[in-house]
Image 1 (tube, rainbow, N blue to C red):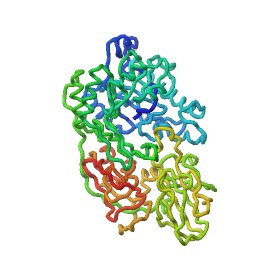
Image 2: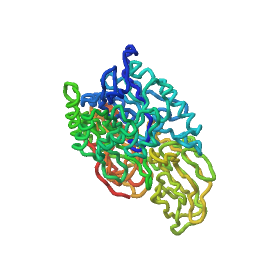
Image 3: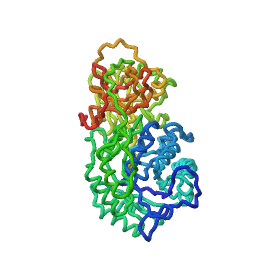
Image 4: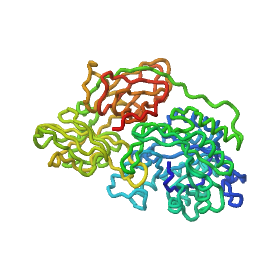
Length: 609
């Protein structure tokens, strides 16, 4: 989603890697006839956005085939820099990061590709796709001419664009456009163009001389007025809506977003009848697995939920919706669509309840979760300073004096990024939260152990707050005392879970309420099936879930709207017991059950806390 962001797009017709003669293939702008030309003939693309980073590799082909059978002739794809270079200088394009395999599947399916490699992508993705390790340079100016930014960004693009060059349409590939943020046209002999939101300010700021200007907008916009605005910047050439919004994102505490199907199909038909090329954002949203969700910051920090269903034509689980069928009926009026039935929804199964057992609290598991031990510092250090970019860190110190009466623990400079779970001598005291809860009371004796578990809820992905450091960004004050002498534990919970180190060992006795960050585990017995399912944590408060070592993402049913987490069938075993691990951060229910359902629940507002 980038309705207010300037991108520069390289129109690069990139198709499959079937190497035919390059000079027999061309993609250009026909200014005389106000259209694109593909191989010398007028061309109108009807595209949909899909993010391979949000979909299990095993389901890429299924989703692409459903898009093709809807009548699309192109897809639009982001390439998240931080997904491929989590450690500076180490590039990962294997497994679920195998971009070229994805491009090849699209090619085999018959889909052209609009590639958007950033370096910045927004997309409600963690830090807008920028790697968190950039923030190790404390004064770095992101998305600027700052050499501290340009050097790693240039290294990324040099590597990526070299990999992509054989996939250009002119070279026998299937990519027809590539978004960039600077003039990378010297690398490719292609058409450059920009896309910006539907305001004069954005178009003026975003368009560049010599680049073709496109626009984006949703169903709340007057089509004629929007394209008149594009025409003020591009008097000739194709009309293009690069991001036509079929839905919208959710933040924790929002109502589940929806965009009316009738409006979507009506506007799509009107744009296509005008000869415009259209990309629908999103066509299949997917899931923010692990810690990949982003956040927005307007008046306050607002984290994006785990589901990226987006009320899209294909659901989070890739199921065709009424919106998809309505869109297909529109497309039939403008081009021949493939003959044959739409591939069905992937099978779902309600596996039922699983009862979990308590493994232990974070403090008791530190040797397992942080085997390298703590970093000592007089004052708090950020996640980035300790190179713990995602997830959780534990900050530990002692109370400097007796505090027999409730005494305020304060973050005076709003330095809790993003939620802090506070315990004294292992007893949960409460929480602090960025922008909303910067003071809480504690009691205790001099020398008591003060533990503060800090959660990174996802870095801001849009706007002026993307330099979003995590952890304790400033001092904490207890009464009148600045707390010092910290032991800071980076927690690698994902490795501990993946290696099977967090197995339940308690007797199953009833747990007390309000006991803070705690790890639970259990087993989903094999049933002979490995079908999609959705896990619901009724009565649980907030935390993280892993299935067979795969991090499904965050749950927060008390805040909503999302009440279930999507569990793709490929994450499960049909023949072996499936290991379930839950990190509950605040309070688990006494029943300790979780429920595996055959349908999602994304639209309950829960309680705004």
